[in-house]
Structures are given as structure tokens and as C-alpha cells.
Length: 308
Image (tube, rainbow, N blue to C red; front, side, top):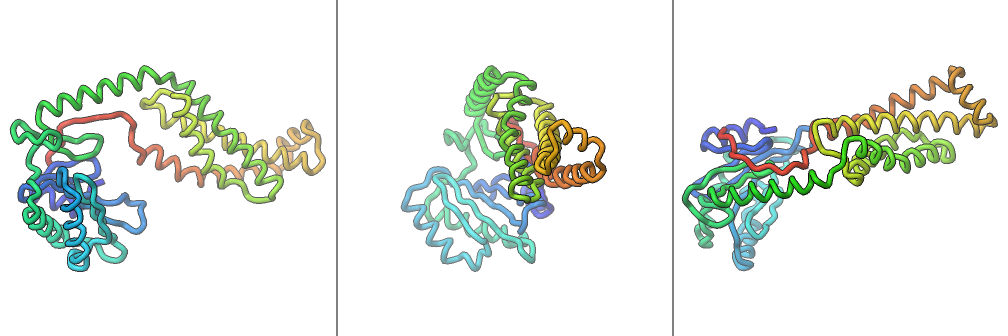
């Protein structure tokens, strides 16, 4: 999600966008601006400056200047990589102002020029400054020339083709998710029966085990994948709750057959089951929301970035 201040910067500067960020050139240098998701606490704004390859001496000089001016520039932290600098502005009480972001831009532009770091209005792969364009590479911003784009597009195609050839089908993924959920179901029962603890929190664990199992068994990744994993979680949670109630009844002295019958007819046992199911689903809901609406698709993708 792109927040209002990032949108304002993009409109003013004629930048491009990915799903979660805006990016483009400012005085010849390449910047990316984004925000944390709405569910993140505290909120924060992210700014990345692309530098291209820089030397250890340049890194040291940049680090020194940023530490000396941290208070003035108002960022929370920064990290320097081989070809860029990452900034985080934590927003505990007040939001990051537009002038704060622009002050950082101006400071970095002046610093880069002082350190003879070249402008980034060129292909970020080969350095060519002709026939270039802005691209969205798996929600990452980049400038590429036509040749480098074609090479990257072909590389992604080959990787995807190989991945798809190794994938099996939805049923295999479903079974894998179910099998990986078994340890969670067993732990659930042990916690409830032998440690006398509310085990519904294991719904959270089972949900993640289902994701791991689906991938481990190389289930097909398509439109139905997320829904199949959620279905597996639901089945596993229901099984865990049923087995917990039956095991508790057996612990009280019932035979297994009698415990199954009691589970079907005893109102107290059924009430306990329904209450546990509701709590379990509420806890698992956090993972399901992340899975259905936040988790990114694994498919590699590169395309021309949309202009804001």
C-alpha cells in the first residue's frame, strides 16, 4: 500500500510505482520511498538511495557524515550496502514530514557529488544511459536498458519453467500440508491433556506447519494454493480439537468407543469443543489474513513500472 506522503512525492517528481513503493530520479540520483504495512507497530517510513558500486573508503565517509547529521536528518537508523543506503524513519507519535524526506534527498545528493559517486540515471546493471526504462522487478524498483531487461526477462522465464517442472499438483501439496500438521496436532493434545493448558494457541503453529508442508512436498503454486493451505489448517484444527476432547474423556476413565459416543451426546463435551474451535479459528485467523492478503506470490516477475 502506498501512503499519501509517498504519493505526493511521486506526483511532484513524476516518479513510477510498484505495489508498495514509489521511485524515480531526484537530481540525477535514484530513490525509493515506501511505508510499513498498516498492521505494523510502530509505523515507519523507508527510503532507499541507490549508489551503484561504492568503495570501502566511500562507505566509511558516508557512514561518518550520516552519524554526524543523524539528529538533523531525523532518521532512526541507516544501513549501507555495496550499492545503496537504506533509511528508516520510525513514526511513534508524529508522521514523517515531506520536508524531512526532501532534506534527506538533498543531503545525499550533495554528499554523493562530493564523494564522486556517479548519478544513477542509467541502467543499474550495465551502466548504459541509452534506451533505458523504469521496471518493477518483483516489487523492487530498478532502471534497465533494453538489452539487460531482455536478459533478465529470459532468466526469469527459465527459472519459472524449471520451478513449474518440479512442482506436482494441488493434491500433493494438500497431503504435504496435512502431514506436516500432524506434529502440531500431537503437541496440541499433549498440552491440553497432560499439561492441562489451553492448547488453542497451537492453531498458530499448525497454520505455519501447513505452509511448510505444502512447499516441502512441492505442491503446485497457483490461484488455489492459499485456499488449499487454509482448508488444510481448518481440517487439522478440527481434528486436533476432536482428538483432545476424546483423549480427555479417556483420561477420565471412558473407553475409546464410549468416549466417542459421549463426545456426540454429552452437552458439556460439545460445548468445550465448540468454544475451543472458536478460539482456535480466531488465533489462526491472523496467519490466514497474512497468507491470503499479505504474503507475496513466489512467481518471479519483471515488467515496465507504472507511472504515478
